[in-house]
Amino acid sequence: MAEVLDGRGRRWGYTTVQTYLNRLRGKGHVASEPGSAALAHVYRAVSTREDLLRDRLQDLANQLCEGATTPLVLTLVEGHKFTREEIARLRDLLKSKD
Picture 1: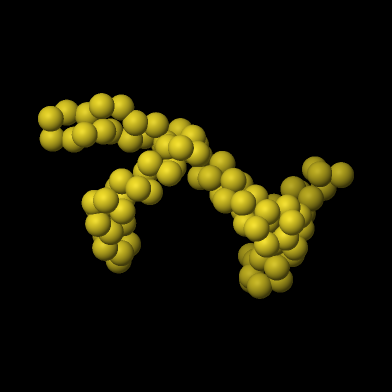
Picture 2 (picture 1 turned 60 degrees about the horizontal axis):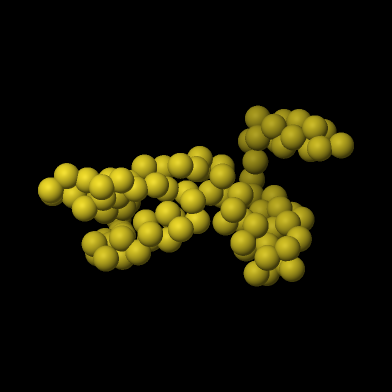
């Protein structure tokens, strides 16, 4: 994980990565297994990116909007330029929620 983060221009210390992985494990997003002599643990994703986004956005809605997600969605939509394909996908999604 540290290599991936370094490749994105961020330098993270070993203990910071461990703390982050432990928090993700505590929330059920990753699992760990004992590793080899060189690695204490081997981590693997349990949740999808969409699962993680959903949970994090719900946490944000709880913190900022008393649990309401609509203000977050409206603010994100108002502040973004969408492609025609994205707009069509959003319309289809909203129609399926009727």
